[in-house]
Length: 287
Image (tube, rainbow, N blue to C red):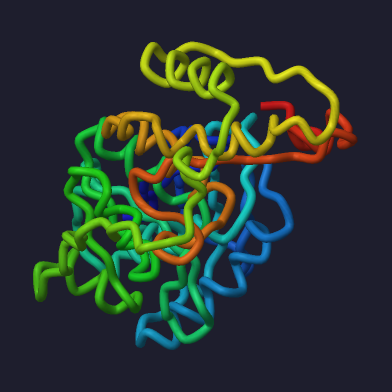
């Protein structure tokens, strides 16, 4: 087989659209070209993939290799496509035989030795893969995030483990880690507030009914003090709400169990003098 189609996932905010990795091997001078709006880290994948394949005791094709990342109008960034590209090259070159990988997705960055490194923002990809009823093969570093989703996700440390799993020589372990329970942190609690009975009543009504709140007043009247203690009287998040919050934390590159905890309501306190760009983020993102 000189043509292979492998599935992966992009990262666009908190969504994760499907990316099809198409690899074609043809006659011609040895080369490897990646098309489909790849940014610098994706274009450099050809060097990482070549070394990873060779160091995993496979042969890299000495022919013309063309890799297309579809859809072509979606910008691709990061090293999350390395594993999918490596598998597509091995399948297209016939080194893995005839495999049906329509129900499998691959995400992970490859080291030159063939080790699979973690990638940021994997939780939205795990959710999207679960909704597509596909199995996700991901790095070991991301198994804690993937365990939050009730899907058929497995993890690997090395490229050879993935190929052995695909050839049914061994089986990759499933992501079944339990969510990290919140540790006893020094949370701000509403019981610490002395006085402010009218303001406390407003917060209790808003928390019970799910209403919005607007704090107005001069500096030093307790607006931030009350707002920072509002999460302590709010009900626990539902699973859907917790996954939505966890997706944002995952995309931000924060580590579960270190920077945030499952089902913990977040609180952010930006300075009143910050600009709109500092508050919501800047940069140019067309999609």
